[in-house]
Amino acid sequence: MRASTLWKQPRAWVVVVIGGLLAALSTIAYIGPASDPQGRLHDLPLVLVDQDQGAQLPGGTAVRLGQDVTARIQEAGHRDGRVAWRTVGSREDAQKILTSGDAYAALVVPRDFSRAALSLVAPGGTPRRPAMTVLTNEGSGGLASSMGEKAARQAAAAASAGLGTTLAERARSGLAAPSADRLVLLQDPVRVLAEPARHTSGVTAGGSLTVYMAIALLISGLLPAVLLTTTVDASLGYAPLEVGPRRVMKPVIGIARSATFLAKSGIGIVMGFVAGSAVDAVAVWGIGVEPDKPVQLWLFCGAACAAVTLLTLALFAVFGTPGQVLALLLITLFGIPMSGGTIPLEAQPRFADAVGGVLPARHVTEGIRSLVFFDGQGSGLTQACAVLGAYGLGALVVGYVVSRLYDRRGWTRATEHELAHPEAVVAMAR
Image (cartoon, rainbow, N blue to C red; front, side, top):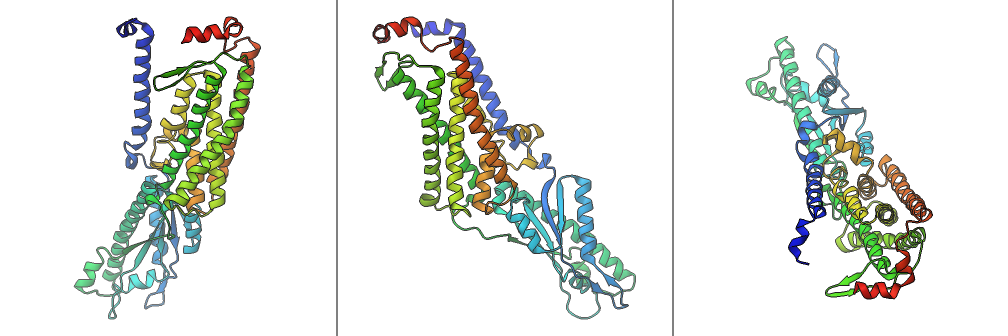
């Protein structure tokens, strides 16, 4: 048969169409969440700290300009909907929130904010510009940290303009008569400083380390399942094993689908855990990643990789060869761009956030982030362990139940002729 005759078969063109559709879906999955993150931004979690102790005017009236500033920032955030501010009373409380991964940045109003601000319009003395500090959070991810810092700086800039207007009005009301140079300062009175909430050590990849490790784990979970399916099916005689120009076809061995699945799953758990351990070992010992919880990270990587292996084997058991394509779509092509590892969830389309929330990539990323950057704190690690455990156990149950159903229906993997004359089948295959 000539190769050109294959194109005359309708199934060949169906495969071409399916391939094009899968390529389109993959493009949507990758480009969709990244197309306009600033435009879709909603409820970005930031912390607002008001430590201002206030000051007294010459007449004895107490003022707290920091309280006025934080109230305006909160009101603007509520009105805009792009930022969700969480107000706390101390810098230490803000750092606890940041180091648990529950916020991307913090804006701190210091204790002497009112005194410094009033010095700009007080007669005599040396004017001292008030300052606000942005605490950044690299562990939340490169883009998430950048967006958080940008939003905090924008809020501080708006607050500075409002404070300048307030101080100018006080000056005009007779509180003080500021000089020309001080009037210039009132146009933008607040200095904005930035510093990390915590100093990270080792390799961090600008906070994007988690997504790279997650990709390595997901692929390392897929590979054992593919290798197992190829080698086990070849050894049982249900598929040829081709290595270069050599093609090996063994006699068919009669074995139930459910028994085959259980055998693959037992080996797959071990292979997946070893593969996940290898990812962790290379990252920590080879590249220099310094996780906050090294032992827990090792256990998480091994267990997560084993869960992905079981999921892939279950898809093979239920759908056959198309299961490999489904596994590729669900675990990597759809899961990775919607995981929140690169684009924060608050900047993704609603559908991407919803779909990504049920895929394993999201939870692998959250678990790694918590153990590498946030000392295992926050709800992300607990949820990640629960979801990945459910995936592993669910894959084991569903794969066995469906393959057992195939056995009971008599849908064996080999015909009676193949089982009765295995050597003849091998000879024909060669």
